[in-house]
Structure formats: C-alpha cells, structure tokens
Length: 401
Ligand SMILES: *Cc1c(COP(=O)(O)O)cnc(C)c1O
Image (tube, rainbow, N blue to C red; front, side):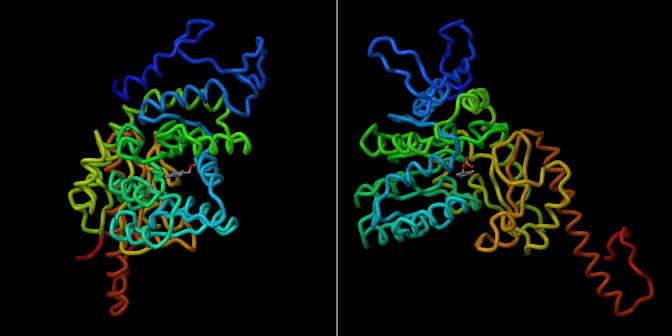
C-alpha cells in the first residue's frame, strides 16, 4: 500500500468502543487486569496513541519495531543510553547542530569516543572505521543546514563490514521521501516535531528499528527508565497531523524546488543548497535515494552575516523563526541560531518552505533580495558623494547608476 493511503486512513483505524474513524484518547495511567492478562500495564511503558503512531511508522519505514517519544532528543537519549564507556561513535561533520552538542556532551561525560567525519566521503569513512572498532555511525539524511546526502546503502555496507550499526536521522526527508531501513540502515530517528506532525504545535520523536533484537530492547528499557514515552494527548495530535503528511511533502518539495531554481539565478545569491538542484554535489544520488521529491528545506548564501541578517529582517511572509516542517514558511540566519561555536557559513540563510502559494513566497524573497541590493548600491553611492558632497542621497531615493 502507498504511504499516502496508510497515512490518510491512519492504517484504517476504527475505535473499538464506538466504531469511530478517529482514534480515541486513552489517558488512563493504569489498567484493570483480567486474570493474568497484562497487555496494557502502567502508562510509562506505552499508551494506545503512541502504539498507533508506532505501527504506522513500522509500515512506512519497512521496520520491525518502533517507539514514540516525547521529543526527538528523547529518542536520541534512548540510543545514547545503549552505549558503554570506551565505545566509539562516528557522527557526520555536518550533523544537526543541536544533536552534535548533545552527543558531544554525552560522550565526554561517559567516556565514549566521538569522531566527526564527512559521511558523504566514503573513503574518509572507510579509513575511520579501519582505525578502531566502532559501535555506531550516526548519519543525517539530508544533513542540516547544507542538505548534503550521504549514500546510505554504501554507508550501511561499510558500517556492517566493521561491526558497527548505522543510525539515520531522516527528520527532513520523512518516510514519504526516503526509507533508510530498506537501504540497509539499522535504526531511523525522526523528530516528529517537524514534518510528521507538520503543524508546529507539539514536540515528539520516533525511533524505527530494522530488527527487534537485544539492542532495540535496551532502547525500550531506556524509554521506560527516562519516562520519555509520547504522552496520549500529544500522540493524538501527532496522528491528526500525520494524516496529511504525504500531501504536505509533495507540496513543499514542489515549492522548494521552484524557489531553489529561482534563487540560483539571482545575482546577489552566491550559492544555493538543495538536493533537487543539478549543481548539488549529491544530486544524482539524491534522485535514486529520494522518491517523489527532495523535501522542503533549502539554504542559500549571501556575502556575509550582516547581509543575511538584514535580509531575514525584511521578511514579510516568511516568519523569522527557527525549526522546520510547519505549515508556515520559516526563514533564519542559521549562524545566529547555532551560536558562537557554529561552523555554518556566515552568510547562510535557511528556509523551511511551508504550504503557502509559491508565488507569494517568491515575491517575498524578491523584495528581500531587492531591498538588500538597493541598500548596498545606496551605501556605495553615499561613499562616492562623500567625496563631492553637493547632493545628499535621500534614504528613499532610487540608487544612482
Ligand atoms: C529538530 C530536530 C531534532 C530534535 O528533535 P526534537 O523533537 O526537537 O527533540 C533532531 N534532528 C533533526 C534533524 C531536527 O531537525
């Protein structure tokens, strides 16, 4: 069955007590036992809403087991909880900034070896894996904010040859566009806060595993120990959001591709990062690895931080905000969000393309870029006139040739 059908019907859900086509919310912490039947026990180990999210994700990803969490970060903590002092983990040098920080802090505190490597460079990964035993390779597809695309089948084969497991954070792709487990990955992580929910009104996370094995049961035990299961009300909201996921991914992919192509033609723009563009370094791979689009995330670069910050501040339709996957389009100067230690290119502007009409988004980007161009020309004109101060340049006057 197609993802769109499973999602629209929430896997043909029928409420057992009413026959309703919408799942009910079951907030009960504990459940009456009938004899020795303890199928539903204490709510810290799960609830019916989380279970429905999990069964749908298992189908979408082609996995063996899934677990829903109260945040993408909680899902990551459950994975980290399976590491031991002395274990070695490879993470992508372009990994989502916040996870780089969280994993880095964890590794330092618990004596886990952490190596950053460009996972889009298979030779570098092979060299790294050959130097010491490695437990886990932590990839992101596409990576954030340059939207690089690692070759997941090649990475999985490499990791397995060296006894390591492959985790893929596929938050920005979603299972509608890319299914890492079918390419050999062992574990997929989603921040369901983003596209899976799609409405910017809850925080949630999901893990989907290729095998229901001992490693997976350590993650389930960690979820229970941390108390990080997705709560019933959030699960219900997430399920409502997921119904339109396939449709939303189709629309944001179309709009983002059009905007990326248009941005690439603008003289003020130095570079555009989007896997759907021919000039993207992994475009050919992305065409094979993604189905039905390249997603709604893209970045572009201006000359410097100041130009990028000024541009973002002129947004009228794009909302100046971080995060991704919401109905409303978001724009941000990425380096300001990541902070001092960021190695993001200074002039990089990140867009999360939403569900607005493409023409309105393009018009907004045009007015932001034009205003930036005018300001630069005006500054140049003022400098020239300072040498011969006969006519002052009014702030609103058109630029001189
Ligand atoms: C937001 C995000 C996360 C973190 O998820 P939360 O739900 O905020 O905890 C992880 N990975 C990626 C790629 C993200 O964008």
